[in-house]
Each structure stands twice: as structure tokens, then as C-alpha cells.
Length: 269
Picture 1 (tube, rainbow, N blue to C red):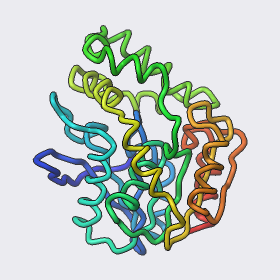
Picture 2 (cartoon, rainbow, N blue to C red):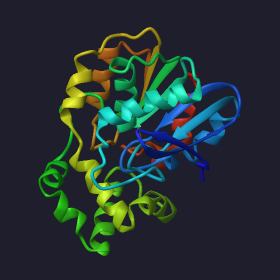
Picture 3 (cartoon, rainbow, N blue to C red):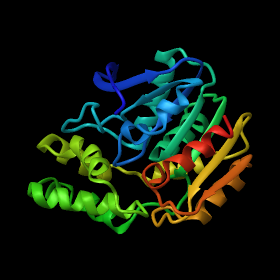
Picture 4 (tube, one colour):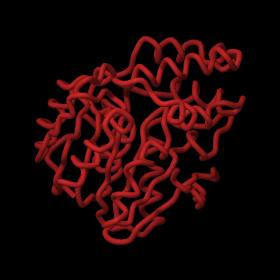
């Protein structure tokens, strides 16, 4: 497991983060409903040659969750900007998965952060996005937050299993569920879904162009959340240098094929 033994205050809220290794900086950004522990099998290997920074997005993992909290995508890219400044990084390489990819894209095109390289892994990046489940939660957030614990856990398990090609190990399920298990976490889980705003994708999508750093895409081809053709569209829009397909992996490449993901990353570092 990755240690998140550091704290950063962002707009008066506590954000958990950690760093391992020495060398040129890499920032790892997780997606939803995961946490920085999505990188637990990847970060230690990257840390053999780089200093690897990771954090739990606001309202996720070990970072602060609370009633009335704003956790939309624009807030998360503002957090990324603040963290990179706090760490004193200049043009770090950035790896973003799922909504972490959107965070990284907004970080550059909206917030103006310059990267050394950008690696996108099954990233939320273009419209259409979302699902009927997201829309339903948006209209009935309070009802979902009031689910009995057993129903909440069952829903969570079904959701994350749908993101994987192979059956998830119980260790992985418990690692990802733990931050959402209590009453605060349960409310936080549905808060994140309810606040997902397609306007934040639309805003950044209008700005896409080839940046002055290399972009590399890695895609689990069995992804039913964000299909391959959307990844190919992102490659074209950003004029990316590479697109690495991983055949036997779905959206959660970290769990389906961690060795393949690590190999795809390291060949372009």
C-alpha cells in the first residue's frame, strides 16, 4: 500500500498525499471511485528512476469529505495546480487515469500548467460522457446516500467490477471501498457522482490542440465505460505521439494488467 503521510490544506480542506523515490518528478492522478491506491502496484517501480508524487483527490480516499463540499472537476484541476506549486515542480511528467486524465487535461488547457510529458490512461476527455446511473444519482443524491450499508456496498462492488475485465481480488475491492464505507464516505461517494459536470469536459474539449510536450495514450480495449474509439479521438485531437492498446484489460487497467500498464508507461518516460 502507498503511504499518504503528508497533508496539504486546499481552501481550508485537508488533502492527503505522498511521494517516493528520487529523480525527475512524476505526478500520478487517480480516477473515481478509486484513490491513489490505484497506483500501489505501479508507483514503486516508477520510483526506481523518478520521484513519484501521488494524492487523493478532494472528497476521495483519505482526503477530507464533508457536507456542502464542492468536488467537481474544475475544483480538482485547481487542486492539481495548487499541489504542483506546493511541491515546487517544474514541468513534471503527469499520468492521469479516468477523471484523473480529465484533471490533467484541464490542468494544462484551463489552468495553464506545463508538463514534461502527459500520459493518459483510459481518460475521461471527450463527450459523450457519463451514464444513466450518474444521471439517476444526480436527481436522487439524498436517496442514494441513505441506502443501507449492505446495499451501498453491493452497489459499489457491482460498479467497480463493471470497470474490470477479470474478477477483482477481494484485497482490491476492500482497498477501494474502505474510504466510502462509513456514513461520511457513503455520502461522499454519491456527492462525487452528483457533482460530475459535463460542462467541465465541454470547456476543455474546445481548447484541445497539440501541446508543446509529448502526449501518450494507453487504453484497455475492453473498456465499456470509455470505449477505444474515444481514446483514438483524443489521440487525434491532441496529435499524441503514441496510442498503446492493452487487449485484455478494461477501464481499470491497473487491476486487469498492471505489468502491461507499467511497461507502456516506462517505454515512454
